[in-house]
Image (cartoon, rainbow, N blue to C red; front, side):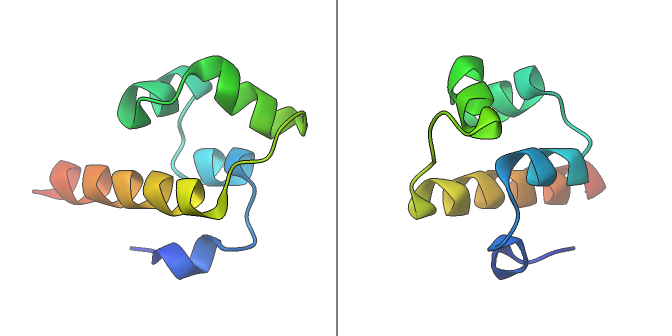
Amino acid sequence: MQKISDFNDMSIKELRAYYGLTQAELSNITGIPKRTIGNWETGERKPAPYIVGLICAKLELKEIKSKS
């Protein structure tokens, strides 16, 4: 399993691809609107660094739960 610090230089799109998720799936997991995720991925907007950390934490919890 990766650590949050491993994703510091990854884009949201790369992070999503790493976990094999669609924008809709990432939206459902994180509660972040799909449109917002799309804006981040196209460069229209940038997520705050703490948001990236929260996304990583949610994905790590999902990964842990799926292995249990």
